[in-house]
Length: 168
Ligand SMILES: Nc1ncnc2c1ncn2[C@@H]1O[C@H](COP(=O)(O)OP(=O)(O)OP(=O)(O)O)[C@@H](O)[C@H]1O
Ligand SMILES: Nc1nc2c(c(=O)[nH]1)N[C@H]1C(S)=C(S)[C@@H](COP(=O)(O)O)O[C@H]1N2
Image (cartoon, rainbow, N blue to C red; front, side):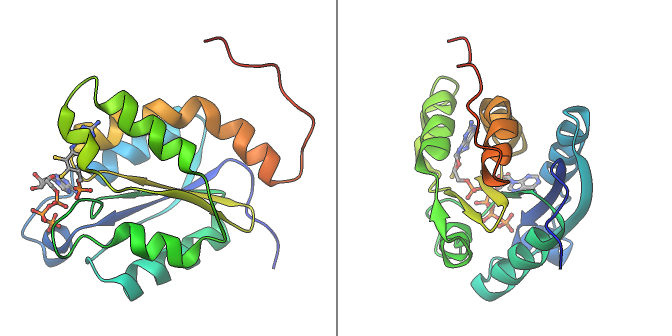
């Protein structure tokens, strides 16, 4: 099977409430819109419950068709928050700097940003980003790292010539 096209994205909402239909998914559609506005083709959106095997299966399936997979929800400290554990199970390499950046930038808005245990990593040529479940937090976190994503995907796809450093 071929590798996913470079600017394809998938959105996975991890939420028992959304899966059961007791909560309307506010975060997934917002993230899909931001990704589309940023030049990505969103190839799939899915809502899954907070269960490691189900999240891991959704991550593996999404990574086959998308070069960027974002999750929203399940990154906190509640007993059923297991998105980081499922992501670490699927990824072969972790990219801690991206999650560090999200927490650092998020803390400018709310100290609660430190309570997300979200991780980022890669599987084959796909980058996976865990975002918090709160819609505003999910969008802000994605906005923080989005400027780095095209270069990250180029590197993953083997385009290793170095870009000019971004302005600070
Ligand atoms: N997909 C979503 N859409 C809208 N709001 C959400 C979403 N996911 C989370 N939230 C909000 O962020 C808060 C924290 O998310 P968290 O994942 O801990 O939710 P929860 O109360 O455990 O329920 P669930 O996992 O079923 O969404 C929620 O209480 C809710 O206000
Ligand atoms: N930027 C930002 N990050 C944020 C938040 C936020 O509102 N803004 N919410 C925090 C809260 S309240 C929690 S509990 C954790 C984990 O959320 P999750 O379990 O819904 O993934 O993300 C945190 N990250």
